Length: 319
Image 1 (spheres, rainbow, N blue to C red):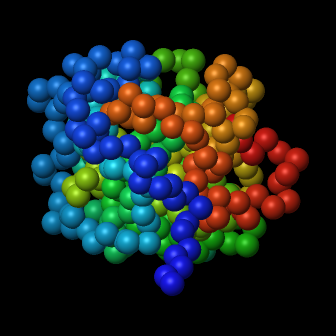
Image 2: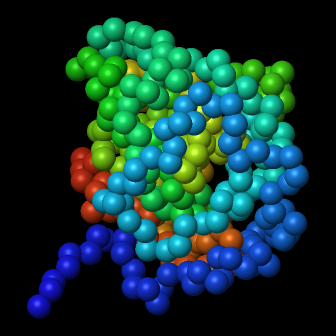
């Protein structure tokens, strides 16, 4: 008899979203009030930068170790429904985000490291071996999607940085250019966008630095040219358009933690039993289907990450 050990986030086929529902244009985020027209990619919005010097690296080989329990969210939804506050506080920022200039783009690595460095994004990408991974993504707003990300493990950047023993955290920072990104003119946000992870989180196998999606360089509205994917955490932790990694002994405070510390914390791990102060986290809207499904602890990745939080039981791990 064949015995198969399923990962903790696996669900039977009967629980997966039917393919025909995903392909139905009329089933789109009914509970969030997004219209069908909003689901369709607006005219003139590129899927990715056609002049990207690393375009020859895509599509990258898929790492089959990372499976999904549901259909991949069709690309058209992911391109037209985005949180990117640098370009506006609404979801339909895709057209405005085309103003993002992603070349030249430099990434600085500094702080408690053996040697600080600044790399051009193309140099950094070509230093790494790219792979495709299928990940679930859970937004704190209680919607979710499934994405074929391309990139490289965060642990490889940590190895490149060679942090000193006193470095306990990685602070990440996005660009700051209010002329290019008018949302950054809003003075009530503490720009630039900042987020952070512990070194242990950053070197966990699931932590992934994204350079592409759907078999091509990642689109501007999705966080080009370099963003983070931490699938066991709420989406606001997955910072977009990164320009700086600082290794530090001091715990960083993210933008949302700075604004609303009673609602958004440092850890932001997914937990259906811990509600947001203003809504439940017990279930989620699957982007592109109009269906709600139960949310899983750590977004279903508990086997891989739960051990990271041993010793932190007194902290608010799920906000």
